Picture 1 (cartoon, rainbow, N blue to C red):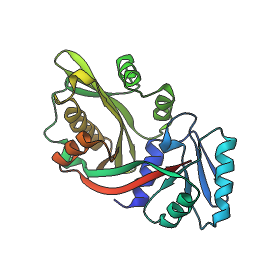
Picture 2: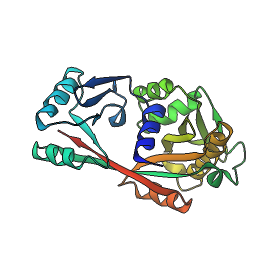
Picture 3: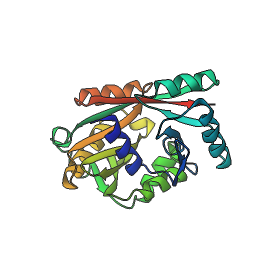
Length: 236
C-alpha cells in the first residue's frame, strides 16, 4: 500500500464536506468533522509565501490553520515549524490482507454489520466523543459502507465504521465502552469488518491510529497488521 493509495482511500472513505484547490494547496472543508477532513495538504510545488494562501483559505472557512504532513513533505514541515506551527497527533497507518484478518469470524451476534447505523451505535459514538459532525462524514462516503455493532454478553459494547474504496477497506471511529474494554469487542469488530470487506470487494483492510494509542497499536500488531505509513499534523 503506497502513501498515495492510503491517502486516496482515506479521502474517499472519510470525506471532507468540500474540497477547494487554492494555489498549490488542497483545502479540505471539514464542517466540524475533525482534523482528517479539515487539513490542508500540498498538491503541487509551492513557495514559502504560498503558505499565506492556505492560511487565509482556512481562516475564511472558519477553520484552524492546519496542515497534513506526509512522507515527502519534509520541506513543508520545516517551513511550518519556522512559522511557529506545532506537531499534533502523529498517526500510524496499518494494513493487512482482508483474508488474513477475516478468519476465524466471530459469532454473528458478537459483531454485526448494518447501515444506516442503529440508534445504539449513534449513542455509543456520542458517549465516546464521536460527534454528529463525524456521523455526517460517514454519511458522505459514497462506496460500500457499514456500521459494526459489537456485543459483550447481552450488552452493546462497541462500534466502528467501515467503508470501501476500490479494493481497499478502511475502518474508522472504532470505539468501545470503558467498562467493556479488554473483553474482545475490538477484536470481534475487526474480524467482522474484514469479513464484510471481503464480501464487498476489498482485498486490503486498513486503518489509522494515533501514535500515542498504545493499547490499540498492540492489538493491531497482535493481529499481524503491518505499518504501511505515517503522517502528522502541524497546527497554529
